[in-house]
Image 1 (spheres, one colour):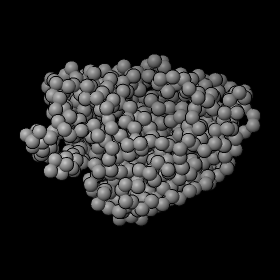
Image 2 (spheres, rainbow, N blue to C red):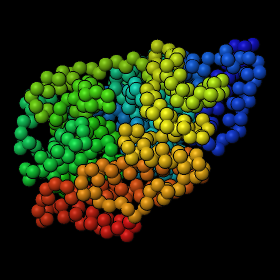
Image 3 (cartoon, rainbow, N blue to C red):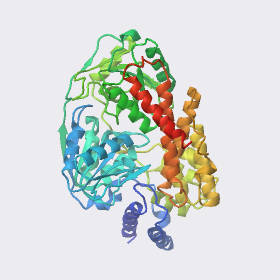
Image 4 (spheres, one colour):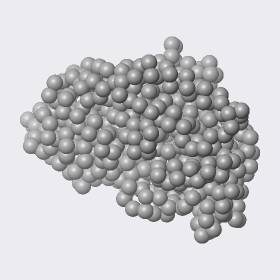
Length: 564
């Protein structure tokens, strides 16, 4: 009897969690189902079973998704190196399906797929944490993986970069999509290193799994000599480095030779700016014929790169400076020589000869086999646990699950250090648990002072007044073209704060009513950053095609100033 009651709780937990979420996160307005879960808890409490139920038992995550378990899904693993056409083949199946969903790790990828499907006359909605673009009659959607709706039934689904289920911080979102998406066909695209783990995970789901291997479509040649001098830079080159400061130093050094202009791409640039920088680099008529970038080019941008040049093969990962891993080197190097581009053969080398042995050995090595996938408890499990421990803060609850979660051998508990940092601040505010959880799951860069202060102010105003007006913490009309790198970094941080406001507005719509204003100010931020990048560095003679870009930016700047 008690065992049956525990199984009923598991079923209710799995059903309720995705009914009260708005594509992956708690949705404030669904009171009825929340009442149901609390009522269930009261029944458990009255019978004395609640304290015996182990809410930290996460050993059977496939049972959290009864909708997917009702299907015998056909799962196709499309695996191969970068530039092998694996995702292209999966998307062809998506295009011909009666309904479907694409799940990618980046907004840029969701944008690209939505654009592709709509161009192919397959109406497709775009749904990311910060955007909703709906198309009349659409039965397809392109989403960031965290936004995947696991309550809906699809004919076809695609999960891109599936090897990211091994990511310490975001892996649990890919695991959720893998186990939870209810589709007749599920296409998984990624590195062959993920195949054994996925096959093992899916043994308990009764799905039919097939693996399709792909080879690279165009040659990739590791060069035997380093770049040496920057005088050897040529059109189509991409120099990869791993710090913002180093990116601008290399850009300045290359442009000092007065032969090339450099576009730049790195993670803290707004996605719109990254796209425009990439477009400018790809344009054969543009004078910006060299790219200086971080590992942000590893996925999400189509780039016409002839040669990848690593400035070094180590990076600071937030904890320590370490050598790049084999998958990281292969992912970045593989961006050279994109199939169908004007550079049909890709090359890869290093700035210094001492890095060549590691480069060559990594390119000749298979990626290490993934052993475990990320997992994280649903909000409902946290809520039920909190009912047993009403004096525990969200920080204490998260910490308890992180330290005590029971897992099968195929899973690890996701790194929640960023959430804990936010929880330590949010716990001081008079907020309900679901609100605290929402702020902890928001896309805030806790290591960015302006961004973290923005979140703190949003949460404080929400707790005090129930409504957060953008003008209370941000004054429209004050944005200007940055004149220094410090000012540029501040503008990038302001963009993050505005982005955060938009994200919150989709989940607490009545409380964050200034979405349109925040979105327009975000766009202005992106254009001001673009104007800074346009002014930076050596300028080629006006008689060349650059004048077209300068005129275009001048028009944008004039138009922007009308709104500043």
